[in-house]
Length: 457
Image 1 (tube, rainbow, N blue to C red):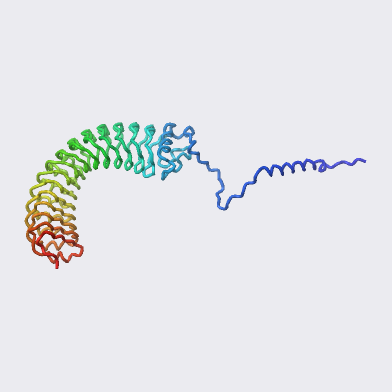
Image 2 (image 1 turned 45 degrees about the horizontal axis):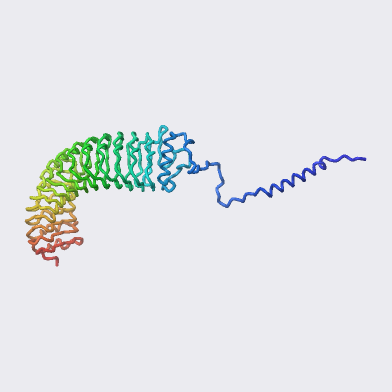
C-alpha cells in the first residue's frame, strides 16, 4: 500500500541546497570588523567635496564667474595651508566659506587678512564686480597688483599692506570711484605714484608708506577733498611738496617723512585747520619755516627735524595751543628761541638740538608744566641756566650739552623729582658744584664732562 509523503519531506532537499549556497556566499563576502572604541558613528552628514574636483556649476547662490574667482584665489594662494580655510571647496555654498560675505546673491566682502596666503593675487578677482571690501593684508603674497582690480567699482576698502608685493601701483586703481581706504604700505612696490589716484574723490585714507616709490608727489592728490589721512613716508620720493596739498581741508594727518624731498615747505599747508599731525622730518627741505604753520590750531605733533631748514623759529608757533610734540632738531636754524614757545601748555617734547640757536634760554620755558623732554644740545646758547626750569616737575630729560652756557647750576633744578638725565657736558664756562638737591635724586644721571663743574661728593 502506497503511503502519502509529507510536505516537509518534499522540501527537505531544497533546504539543503539553500544552506549550501549561503555557506558559499558567506565565504566570499567579508564580515566588517567592529569599530574601535570611541569611533563616531556616521550620521548622514554631507561628505566634503574633493578640492581637485570642485565644480562651480553645482553652486547656485552666487554667479558662476564669482565662484570661479574664489576657487582660483584659493588655488593660487595655497589655500590648503591657510590658517583659516573652513569650508573652502568643501561645500557648494561659497557664502559660508571662511572670510566670504555675500549679499543679494553676490560676494560683497573678502576678508582673508593674517591668513598665511602665499603666491600671487589672481586677476580673476576683478570679476567680483559687487565686491565692497577686499582685505588680504598681512600675508605672504608676491608678484604684482593685478590691474583688473580696477574693475571693482563698488569697492570701498582695499587693504593689501604688509606683503612682499612687487611692481608698480596700477593706474587702473584710479577707477575705484567708491573707494574710501587704500592701504598698500609695507610692500616692495616701486615706480611712481599714479596721478590717477587723484580721481578717487571719496577716498578718506591713502596709506603708501614704507615702499620703494620714487618720482614726484602728484599735484592731483590735492583733489582728494575728503581725505583725512595721507601717509607717503619712508619712500624715495623726490622733488618739492605740491602746494595743492594745502587744499585738503579735511586732512588730519600728513606724513611725508623719510624721503629725499627738497625745496621749501609750502605756506599753503597753513590752511589745513584740521591737521593734528604734520611729519616732514628726515627730508632735504630747505628755506625757512613758514609762519603760516602757526594757524594750525588743531596740531598736536609737528616734526621737522633732519632737514636743511634755515632762518629763525617763527614766534607764531607759540599759537599752537594743542601742540604736544615740537621737534625741529638737526637743521640749520639760527637766532634765539622765541619766548612765545612758553605758551604751549600741552607740550611734552621740545627738541631743538643740533641747530645754530643763540642767546639765552628763555625763562618762559619754565611754564611748560607738562614737558617731559627739553632737548637743546649742540647749539650756541649762552648765558646761565634759567632757575625757572625747576618748575618743570614732569621733566625726565634735560639736555643742554655742547652750548656756551656759563654760571652755576641753579639749585631749583633739585625740584625735578622725575629727572633721569641731566646733560651739561661741553659747556666749558659752566662752573661751581652740583647742588646737593640734585645729588640726592636717586634715579638721576648727570653728565658734566668738559665743564668746570665739581661732581657730587
